[in-house]
Length: 459
Ligand code: AMP
Image (cartoon, rainbow, N blue to C red; front, top):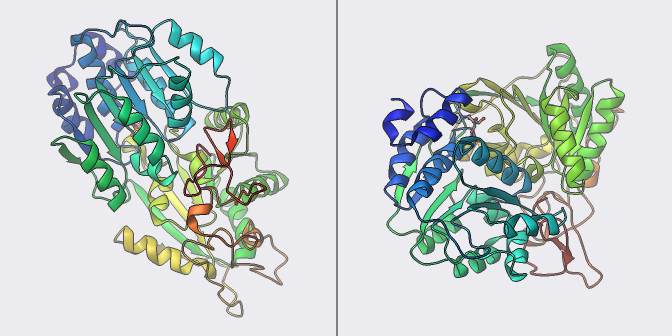
């Protein structure tokens, strides 16, 4: 099957051809015709499947048949994403695929000045790609009107809920017209997602290209059991011995990401850290340096890495396993994209055994384990399991790998705060305001002590 049979107009086909795409991916094959029929969809498509083109191409096609919104500040299509990085990437795709069409699009997120965004909106825009917080700010300042939006896309909806955007999403939905088309994309499914879908979607077509909560077959997975205190040594060994040129490494905390990045630098491996405490400029630069090969390792927290699309990224390393099993699926989905082969390696210490079991249960597989010569686990070290939700990023796991003189990554930082999951931010750092409430970051530009159940946004 080629793109020409999907009912897309010549300007879109030309742009696709320039991208070198010859065949639609499975999600594109399924989603494009249904979206063109103006039906709602609920798509279980993980990252790397080509889902962005899966919704962007038909969205652009539909716009060519519709009357453009004419009133000031009105837009025709709205794409919501959980993170700035994903918004920027989807924005680039919309620009690329729509380059021979007359539509204007813009990307809106926090952490950068609002005035340039207002002035772009003032000139008239058809498609807005936004993170929820800044979108609401702009609407409240009358810079944007979403009352005639014809197509709404919720991209990576699971992550939006995970990041506590549900209240913002509800506010946004209430401002949209009821006769719109809704496209919901999610890599994983939970009861919460199903509830959102039930309330939002009208007789949706269900599209599932990979089984729920599964990992891509394109990614080979491996676990190296290792003492926590020797993880950094093992990571350096793996990178140098295998001559890995481009490695995305995940840590659970921002502090852990900074620390590991510095240590890798001192081991002679160029690296950069990317997380929510970095300015947007620093995040963009780190990503650009990683993409162009100026830095060999990008150390990231889950949220900062969300949606990052790096062509042919060969290696993902879980320096620490995530406490939320679904995050494992998202993390390793950074590699093995668009039909390429990728490798995902997890360094697992004795404290993390339960996380590993949970991941294997969720993904219905047993991940191959290899103990490397010279990195055998020390049987005298007792497990101090990290509790699943409340303490995972906060408690337990102290002082791992003692006696080895190695570095425990962020393990030593997991003991400070004891709190419920609801009061932790997604990067695992507890932030308390003077009155004890968690400070949430609204798209990175405001610290207001709001909803206690809200996780940090846009980390
Ligand atoms: P996504 O799942 O949307 O993040 O897309 C993953 C990657 O697949 C992106 O780098 C796209 O450029 C690429 N891609 C999307 N559609 C196709 C296609 N039909 N053929 C080849 N590559 C594609």
